[in-house]
Amino acid sequence: MNETYRLFIAVELPTDVLDALGKTQSDLKQTIPSRMVRWTRTEGVHLTLKFLGDVASDRVGDLQDGLITAISGHEPFSLSVEGLGCFPDSKRPRVIWIGVTGDIPRLAALQKSVEQHIALLGFPTENRLFTPHLTLGRIKNHTSRDDIARAGRIVEEYDLGMIARWRVESISLMRSQLKPDGAVYMQLLEAKLGS
Image (cartoon, rainbow, N blue to C red; front, top):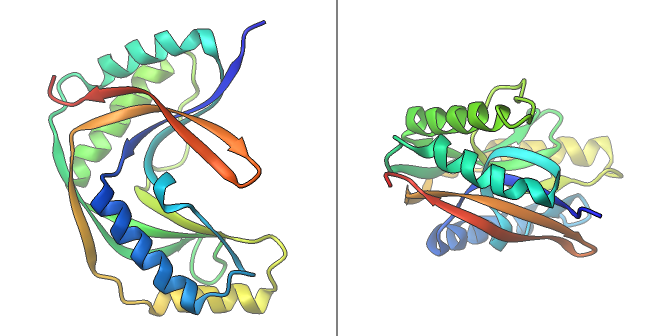
């Protein structure tokens, strides 16, 4: 019987960027009580380009080939981590995120290329607009409306300038294993840009 893997394609972040995210997250934890937010483990933060879901393990080779084709012609570029926000918005926050700025046109072109090449393998294209962000936490389901509104106000008023910058030189095919204490990620392929 063929095993299935929960897969996604992402830009992984260097240690110094993860450290800066961790400091911001620690600061937020001082003002937003933990009863309200399930915080993301900093070492697991990544910039998702495409979520694939449960995929038969025998499809991994095809995905690797598709990913290598998708990045051909794309050169490395720079991104920054800047600004704080919520999805869907600060009035009804469900996700707390840090924004990604920098060479967004090149990031968007790379994401579009990944989306198109992976679609050729039978994976549906995403209907919503690609919004680059790094998830810091999710509002817990049982949180009261007042606490949800309070969390949104805190995020809205938090002054977060540019906290880190890095050069994107590769993208990764990642496996996510859901554990009781959170997801564990394993890189299956690193595809280098400009090669």
